[in-house]
Image (cartoon, rainbow, N blue to C red):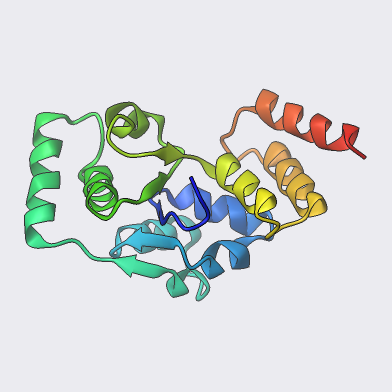
Length: 168
């Protein structure tokens, strides 16, 4: 991925993880970030009981009726994922977006057709592009590691933390 590729955030946990790491501003100020309609807003509101005004500044990608029907038909033929997942897949495919999610069931179905990455990848992307520094990178990993509500592989987080500490 180059720095100009648009990214479609389809997992509210990505937003929550960046908020917990103190990097929500970085996520929402990335001009390449989009979300699909109100699906993510509603999920965020449900999980947090109040929508962050910061999140509402992310640019919204709207689907046509034809795209929504195609997503619904995919859902009817393969119920491994939600209809909202298929909305996101169609939006990413039709707009040449990268999907940003932690949903491995969705990844298995759509990664042959669109690029799918998670929060760790995006965090490292921000570090490589010098949007965040090493201290912010380390802090985010440590916060995610120590938060029981963050579902990321501890072994990977520990490995990344150790690697950063070894470079000091």
